[in-house]
View 1 (cartoon, rainbow, N blue to C red):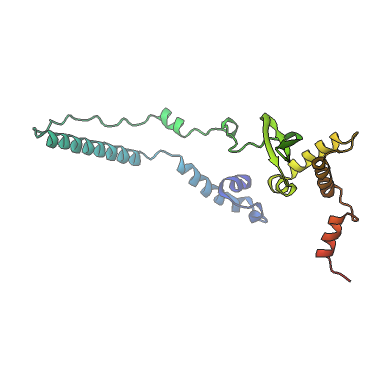
View 2 (cartoon, rainbow, N blue to C red):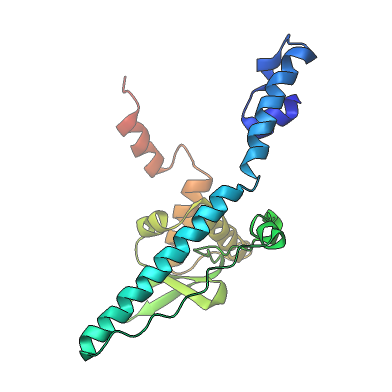
Length: 209
């Protein structure tokens, strides 16, 4: 009963601490009846709703025919009795109240992130950029390393660092852009206290003696 009240009525288990079965039973019965009442078919409500829909439909048809008659300046068309909407059967009600399991609901992501698979140096005239290649041959060009930091998340940076390390494991970077990328990523992932950048950071933000 406590599990039912917790899941269906929002009670906390601690609320029932020290209570006996006879004390919990009335609470359970009251909440159970409330929930069951939500799913009971109210015949009077259904009949009233059906009657109201039929009256509204009939009224709309009357206005429509009256407008047609006025527009053509002819005698109003004799109204034909309209059929009242049929009441829903028990099987149809059950289908409307059927609960669909979450596993059957398929949702697609609004935005897909394409992982980085490679990088290279791209030349445009006299300028050289870092060309980042993602899955589905999606490419991005960056001239300044700060732009990479702004556009990448941690996962992208880790992937790029792995690709750069793999390429220069057996060979030294020769081009300026290759060296710059190697140095900047190494500063992020393997900071050296004697590096000029980290010395400047320390002098700017640490208290000096």
